[in-house]
Amino acid sequence: MQVSKTFKRIIFLELAIPVALLTIGIYHGLMQTIYRAGVLRDVSFLKLDYYQGLTLHGVINAIVLTTFFAVAFGHVTIAFYFKKEPNKKLMWLGFWLKVTGTAMAAWAMLAGKASVLYTFYPPLKAHPLFYLGAALLIVGSWVPLFDWARMYTSWKKENPTTKTPLAVLGTLINFIIWFVCTLAVAYEVLVLLIPWSMGWTKGVNVNLARTLFWFFGHALVYFWLLPAYVMFYTVLPKVAGGKLYSDLAGRIALFLFLLFSIPVGVHHQYSDPTITQGVKFFHGLLTYGVAIPSFITAFTLAASLEYAGRKNGGKGLLGWMKRLPYFDKTRFLFPYFICGLILFVFGGVTGIINASYSLNSVVHNTAWMPGHFHMTIAGPVFLAIIGMSLYLYSNMSGKKIFMLNVATIIPYLWMIGMLVFSFGMSWGGLRGEPRRTNLGTTYLNPESPLYRSDWVPTTMLALFGGIIMFIAGMLFLVVFFGTILRKKSVEGKLEIPVSEAYHDEKRIPIFDRFKPWIVTMIIVLLLAYVPALLNVNKNSGPKAPPYNIDNPVPVVTGKK
Ligand code: HAS
Image (cartoon, protein in one colour):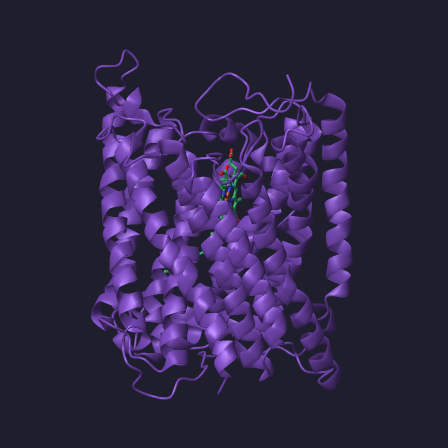
């Protein structure tokens, strides 16, 4: 499909800006492992301190990259399946809001005025521009939803009995989840944090802020995941050489995410004393519910891959696995997808462990947690994002991929690094190693009375894995920007591989309509969150004054 120059320009910018920022994000990932292994026993390096680096790492990799990509991929998906481009003025508006927000937050972080980590829990206090920047980034990502909804409604009017393309369904579901969950964080930022950070209010209700954050925060992880799922359902079977096992399975899984992605946030607050056990139990139960669509996905994708492997000549019980295009340069997206999926098997299992109220008390706030989430966001999500960014850029620009051989092995290198890193973190977590801690200044410093020699192997493994990932990440940047610098060799166009369905079930209206699902979503949300908020309202202590991360004394704001 041919697309306009403006459309291309916006998509290229939305892909390239966050990939460029990855240089900072990936560098600080490596630095984390160096500090934590005690190789560097200082609070800062090159004038950037530990928590400043950790904030940059989390915000760039987990918020900026994922949000820019979700919007760009959404635009591309909608344009490709509806054969119509979204409104360019709105595309630019969303883009500039996101860029301005990112620039504001980046200034605050780089100036050392927002070392509050990506969760920005109060009473840690950031500069108001950090919060305002985050809010603008979010508002910028809302804009396209309204335009896509308009396009969807008019398409549906013309095609009332045609099934909505699975990729479009996934994109719309994802942005509906995103819109609803970000309302809570918008309230947290605009009503609680900005006035407090400006010194207009003396204190902040820390429990309320955390509860609002996690209303947003767990749905956020599915906002990261769903673009990857859209690719796994609609692109992966095709590039593997087969078909999607069941189209309906994909629809069911995606609609289940609409129901269960948000009302599970309290599983991040099992240790918060303000929330009662009944509410925690209910959120825990729903957390097992949100794993179901991923189990459906695991089965459907495995069946799709088996079909592809057999079509490619695979025989016997497991022989099909050997016939998948692991190193086929002409289908280089496959390695990015399969490595992500392999990592997600471990990411998923560790997530289910976290969901258990009792097991959570063993692993909460330990290094186990980054062990878990790196095998999710830095596994299927990250690999799908970088693979698809490269694919889209190359196709739409008409430029051949620079060092295609290297591009094909990067995901394997990343996966190996990630497995080593996450094994080290998870093992360390089980031995009590804390997360978000500069271990080099204390526990991993042999001169400190707190020294823990049993954390040497675990942090060394994490360091070793971190180095491998750093190399893979840098190679990707060379490949991506090398491709940008190339001359175009063919006319660029927008092409996405489309998987046919092996079981293309008849249209079932309930799985092709949003209204009943949105209504159920609201009911489940109310059941899960009204009691949680009532708990917070009843059990919260006095409001907290602001703190900086490096000082146990409150920051003084306003008049004394
Ligand atoms: Fe999580 C904490 C529970 C999924 C990210 N999670 C986090 C944090 C992050 C995160 C960032 O219940 C830390 C937040 C912070 O900073 O404090 N998580 C879960 C559960 C799931 C889950 C039950 N998490 C994710 C995903 C993430 C993510 C996805 C990012 C994208 N998580 C928790 C809990 C906590 C938590 C607690 C709080 C802990 C605490 O105490 O703080 C589920 O959705 C997982 C379901 C997944 C599966 C896996 C399906 C497998 C598939 C692969 C199939 C493979 C194939 C390949 C087909 C059931 C689909 C075959 C191979 C061949 C070669 C053929």
